[in-house]
Amino acid sequence: MPTCPAHIGHYRVVAWVTIDAAAETAGAAEQYAGGMTGPATRLAICRLGEANGVYLLYCTANWDRVRDTWCKNYDAAVAHAEREYPKVAGRWAAFN
Figure 1 (cartoon, rainbow, N blue to C red):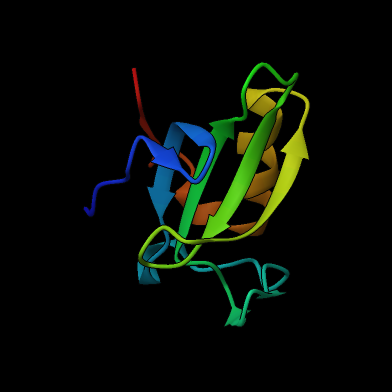
Figure 2 (cartoon, rainbow, N blue to C red; figure 1 turned 90 degrees about the vertical axis):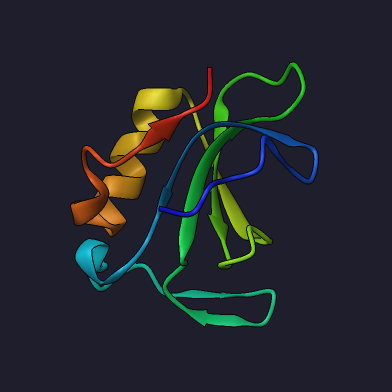
């Protein structure tokens, strides 16, 4: 499995997962931002400074952020990601 950087831009990575054929989308995960069309190839749950909540980042294979979604906490971000990409459940890698 590819590794993830500790930071993506200003975001500090808390957990991440790669999207591959084994983690196909639920069909509602198309990304149309930053020149990317189609499902993300990497997801990361991140913190941004001292802000409340976390961000779910949708990334390219090179960990470039395409878009993000704010979530109230880690569990909400995991649930949101797993609604769009059901087969990533149980595949998250955590940063300590």
